[in-house]
Amino acid sequence: MANLWSSLLHLLPLATPLSLSTTTAITHPSPGFPMVINTWGGPFTVATDAAYESLNASAFLSPLGDNNSSRLAPKTAALDAVQLGCATCEAAQCDGSVGFGGSPDEQCETTLDALLMDGATLNTGAVAALRRVRDAVGVARAVLDHTSHSLLAGDQATAFAVQNGFVEEEIGTVDSARSCREWRDGGRCQPNYRLDVTPDPKTACGPYAPTEQAKTSSLVEDNNKKKRYQVGHDTISMIALDGAGGMAAGTSTNGASHKVPGRVGDGPIAGSGSYADGEVGGCGATGDGDVMMRFLPCYQAVESMRRGLTPGEAAADAVRRMTRRYPDLAAGLVVVNTKGEHAGAAAGWTFTYAFRGGGMGATRVVTVPPINGAEDHGVEI
Ligand SMILES: *[C@@H]1O[C@H](CO)[C@@H](O)[C@H](O)[C@H]1NC(C)=O
Ligand SMILES: *[C@@H]1O[C@H](CO)[C@@H](O)[C@H](O)[C@H]1NC(C)=O
Ligand SMILES: *[C@@H]1O[C@H](CO)[C@@H](O)[C@H](O)[C@H]1NC(C)=O
Image 1 (cartoon, rainbow, N blue to C red):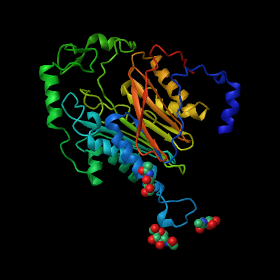
Image 2: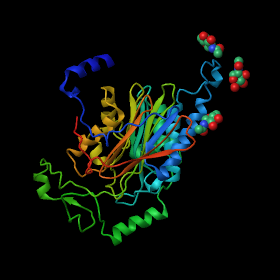
Image 3: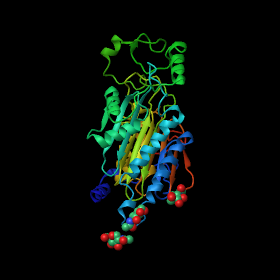
Image 4: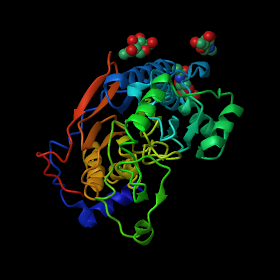
């Protein structure tokens, strides 16, 4: 298949030399294996370290040529590392945007979205709008291991979690309750995600009803009107490579603050929040998930690498496909190929990602300026 694509690439106009800006399509060399890479630096590096250390420990279980099966690294080492990394962020409430007690919805409830994907098999487990359970990525792992489904949602995902031994409990906190009350009572529910409803969502709280005008113009796409407010709704998306061909990806987030109850973002959507194909590479995403999930940017970036783009070109291309239609988008992508070569691309904000690989004694953070800054001369390919 790879040969077929490369011969096609020589025929298609797509294969004309890329004129991507060098400043925005930088691909960094591989640090070596094992390797962990994830969205954001700062508080998110606790996840990088936890995942890297677990992966490094299992790498040393299988020195090359050792036939002693009790010392072989588990086939799931990369998956286990991603789960541990995301769970570490959930427990540490990385930046308030992952785990319990963050991003309360309009009704002040925190709900969680998480995804795990095994790059060897493309097996996927995910939960969406998970209520009253803290360890969202753990429940995603149970979906992956103990069902042939890919995604469970809402109260039934909670019931499944309880059947699998997870604790059902209050996951809001005093802080999340207070900030939600301030938003609702003091701030008149500003800002919010409602459009074309009455009373006017720009000045009043709900309950809301659709306006007559919206009913008759619902087919008219008006991206400017749909421009939404953005607060820091970050996400951890992580890829782990064990060096023996194993690769996995995952995502965990508590979504967008003041979301409409029931809202699910890009996080638990394979190909959007994250993606891993052990034959090609992996990707993690963060940003305005409501828009990003329309483009499956991580699937796009991995498929672009399959067709010959470098990680830097693939990341920048995936972001440009979104900003061409949504110029005000905030997005960040981190992309890695099977060699461990890596890159990021961002729009609308300065993005950072963290990585640790080979014998690195500490996690390093890469700063990625937005491609829609003044220096961007790239084209969508
Ligand atoms: C491991 O097994 C393979 C295949 O049976 C053999 O060729 C190799 O020599 C063995 N290595 C060690 C270290 O025993
Ligand atoms: C295999 O490895 C385990 C753990 O390191 C060790 O206890 C055991 O003796 C080894 N077996 C053989 C046959 O070398
Ligand atoms: C990786 O694990 C080995 C074996 O436990 C250890 O000696 C080494 O220091 C670890 N590397 C890093 C960078 O932590």
